[in-house]
Structure formats: C-alpha cells, structure tokens
Image (tube, rainbow, N blue to C red; front, top):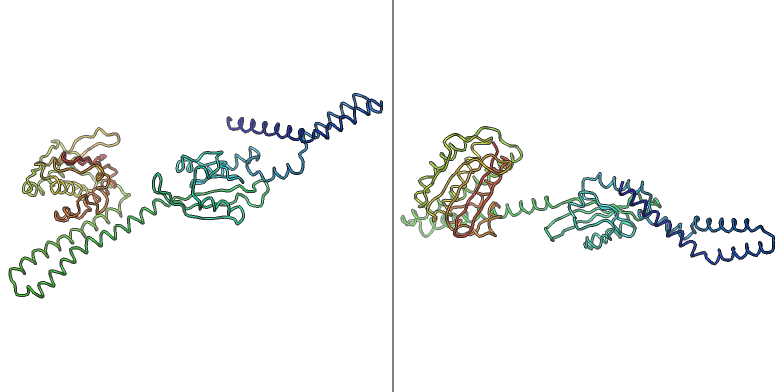
Length: 426
C-alpha cells in the first residue's frame, strides 16, 4: 500500500511538471490566441463568454496533448515512466529468480534488486546508477554492449571484502518493445563455492603428493646406499633398515588417513544413528594410549560420569575423534605435565553433550587456530614431521563431527595449552 501511494505521488508530480512545461513552452501561442479572441470580442464579432470559453479550451488542449518530441522521449524512458502495473510485474519477475538479480533502466539506474541480490550485495541501493556501487569495468562494459548486441556473459572476481566469484549474464528485457527499450536484467550466479572446492582439490593433491614424495625419496636413497657403498656393512644395513621401516610406516599412516578422510566425505551428509556410549569410548581410548602418554610425561586424567552417556553416532568414527585428539595432545602438549579427558552435559543451545581434551603445553598463537582443521596445515611443519604427524588428524575430526551434526571448538593460547571441545546431540 505504501509503495502504491508513493508511486501515485511520483506520477502526479511528474504529470504536473509536464503540464507546466507545456504551458510555458507555448506562452507566445496562447498570448496570440488570447489577443485575437479579445479583438473579436471588442469588434462584437464574438460574444465575451464565448471568447472566454474558447480561450480556456485552448489552454486545456495545450496542457493535455504532448508534442512530438515529448512523445519520443516517453517511448525511450523504459521503466522510469512505466505504469505501476508494469513496474510491479518487473519486481515480481526478479523476485521469482533464485539467483541475485538486478534490473536497470536505459540510464543504468537500478530499478529493483531481488532478495538474493540484497543479501550478496548489501551496498547496492535502488535508484542509484549501478556504476556507483558495482565498480567492475567488465560488468559495465557488458551492460553497454547488451543494449546494442544482445545478451552478454562475463565472470566477475572480487577480492574485497571477501574473495568471491560470479558469472554475470546481462540481457535486455523483452527486446524490441518500445516501452522496455534499454531495460536490462543482470543475473549473477555465484561460483564462489565451486572455485574454493577446486582450489582445495588442487592444494590437496599437491600436498598429498609432497607428503608421500618425501618419505619415498628417503626410501630410494636408503635402498641405493644398501645396494652400493653399504652392501657389506652390517651396522649400516641395520641402521638404514630401521630408518626405512619408519619412513614406510609414515607413508602407511598417511595413506590410512587419506582413505579415512575419503570414506567420511562420502557419507558426509548421512548422520549415523547407532547408540554410542561416550564414557566407555573415552575409557577405551585412554587405556590404549595411556602408556604412550606416561612415556611422554603427561599421564591422562579422566573426568567422566559414572552413568553411561549415549549419543547417536558411529562408534568407530567417534573412537577416531578421541584417538586423534588425545594423540595430538600427547605429541604437542606433553610438556604441560598432564592431559585431561572429560565428558559432561552441555549448556550450549542445540547440543546435549560436550567432550573435551585439554593439554597444558606450549599452545598455539591465535592466528593459527582457525586453520588447524585444514588438511596438511601445520604450525611447525618440521616439528610435526619429526613427531610423525600427517597434518590430517584435525581435518578428520572436523569431518566426523560435522557428519554427526556436532560442533568442534578449539581454544589455545601460547604458554597456556590447548582445549578442544566436541559438542554432540543425543
């Protein structure tokens, strides 16, 4: 209702302005006609009331009938002077499209944006020229070309405020119709997710190849040495065989992690529903890794309820979550002297249970924390490799937690250790 009233007011003001312009533009003509009618009345060739009526009729005719130039201008105005029904039809058309859509008139002024366009481009406002807020030269060029050559398609890449990609299609609205001359529809299909996945896939292949090539190169070097200079050196053979075993184990662990990550991703959108007792699971992991923790100087301390805590999940995957988190704590936080494992009721909205693994070691600087779950991301790559880390442990944990519709939170500060929380639903 408010839009209708506003449109009516704008239309009324526009009409009044045109009438005023027509009268001012034909002042001399009206003055000549008035003098002529006055002379005829003075000569008693025309009754005074007839002269007044004739003059008023001429004024009304001049005010109502547009001239040829004005009619031509009206035909090219596009949506600026379109009827309210036509403008509403354009809005409904744009709002029905699933992609961000922008309508511009013949002057490249934005007529309407649908909800998706407002969400993706909050700085773009109705009534402003599109060049004011979308300063992307290829798009502006495509807009101009679309007016003379028809539909245009380009790819947009914007790095600020965040890196995004769009495929923009600029097309005339009902070309050939005078009332729509110059009106363009700009449809923007988001390519951001696909580009990021492509980048992740490329980085993943490069990192996996690098991680496998390093131990493989070492193995080839050891084999060449054993076949050559150390062929008859028993002590060297025993030492190199031990190193080769370690490198082969590293490759085996990396391949196992890659296969595990692949299996989890294949079932990413299917939430497991089997009942799993987190208390017994935590005790099992603590028993399996207890000796490793004691040898590292950081015994495991359990804070678990007496009663079972059951959630819907996949037992093997949740075991892998606890195992990876505790192994990470032992590798990178053992200098803190202890590692705590706890399971408790969650007070976070939407989650029932929280499982935590806390170490009191060196911790991680704030800029590294958001990237710890990225594949192959390491704060200190050389130290991680020496500790036989593959760089995939936390990535696996994140994918498993996501599959269980949970949430993973990592808190860490240098010198104060690291606390990892896994929030789950029953």
